[in-house]
Image (cartoon, rainbow, N blue to C red; front, side):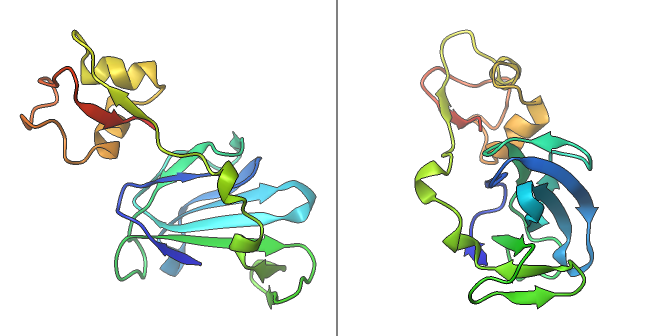
Length: 166
């Protein structure tokens, strides 16, 4: 499925698993492929960045990458593939994966989808401190907040401003 989303929107793992591949993958551009329990696999494509590597274990909802438009994409969007080890109603076999493509929306519970977290700056905060507090690099924090502070200078963030942290 393709879901319109702005570049930099957080991708999260749809279920726990192990990263089978993270890198450039043909027309999919930057891609993360995760093997899940019982032979299931998910792919997210066209990322602007990924934050996991092959062999990395991920938990459901873990931050794995950012929406982008790499590969053959007309613009930024969330491109999600879900593959079953066996045929399901409405599925089709995909030989290069060796599994059956299914509609991810039939398996994703939107009530369990984590939402972005926003942090309100308090006196004395710096962008580096906020990033560190939330387990992010300063670069990842800045990428989550592309408009930046009103001053245009990440060293001059002001109390009361809100920034996305996850």
